[in-house]
Length: 499
Image 1 (cartoon, rainbow, N blue to C red):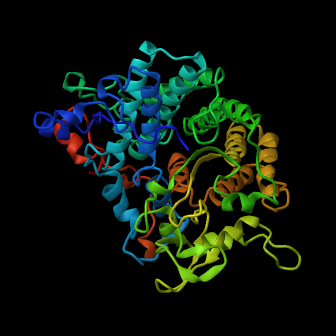
Image 2: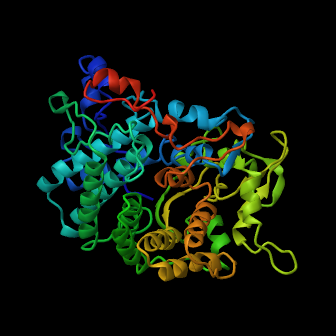
């Protein structure tokens, strides 16, 4: 549990429409105000205030529109792993509507509610304010300063990468004639109206340059004082995030380097025998970075990951109905999980055990994902893994394949296959990459990777007509629209093509 749960209200860097409309009437919106007993004037001038401010960023990440739900569930809804059940009317026909309805929403308020764009920039502004002020704060020991400063850099890098992959084309796969650049970069905190700026969209290359810089700073600081993993940003998580970012950037040597560095860390790949149990534990033992929720932060039956993915309350118990099970695996996905069998016909892949038949309490029963099943002991309350160790092996495998190191790529691929109960593959040529992509799909399913993996590799979404149909990579809806409120206020921002 974090020491200080929620810290302060800050201006959103780009939700300027709110500022313009309310600043004169409500100057408190512009203040840096802790919810604890501390004086707002000293929130960023004391070690305690900085600590609480960092925890405030984690609170933002828990929002439904970030890692509370949408960064995971919307990616699955947009991709080809999942189908919607229409049991609650949520997440239906997502490949047609969700890009605009979720990621295209800008409305934000001082209490931190609003769309993905708005909440991400609220959190980035908090990181900026911390980094602007931490050098002037006295700490009892340097390790605390390094730990908190490292987390601010790590979290800003994570948020900018998330914004980039939602609103921009990924490096190397931009559609000619449709590319409008990256996202606006702001690295100075906004604490009052005098600091408000109206930046244009940065080039995608410049966004990645900033993310690289933030991660390099985080790694350097964490190497001096590493916070406890995985509840906070930490050295192994920063290295792992760097491997992910570099893979998106088609910077394969860097992806290999940081995946290798992270694999050597203290958190290791779970064994075959412990893998399923890890998903039933309050904290997944494979997590390098995992958002932790306490009971008062329960997102609830309408929008939690548990209710989104399953009707079950407990694994193996179909007598009690909890959630709605709005988003469930497609038949094709389940068939792929079951495709490798023993000589007696038994399914070899242990990951199949994470998908169970739901209840009939909300209507027709479907096979559902049970990775998020209230395992904290409270229904609709789960810690959310953001980065797991298994990603490192598949990142390194994909990067090594693209570097021509096919033997190394096959070795890492087989680490994941054999951990999951499958036999070692003996593949050559492009079949290696095809199987890497397949294992990425199966391993990360319902964790928010699938849509982004298809997008970063320039692949079409293949989806049944009953689920809204597929989506060609050249379709403009591959990118989310920049929220209209931002465009109407900041004339320097150019909207994405087709909106």
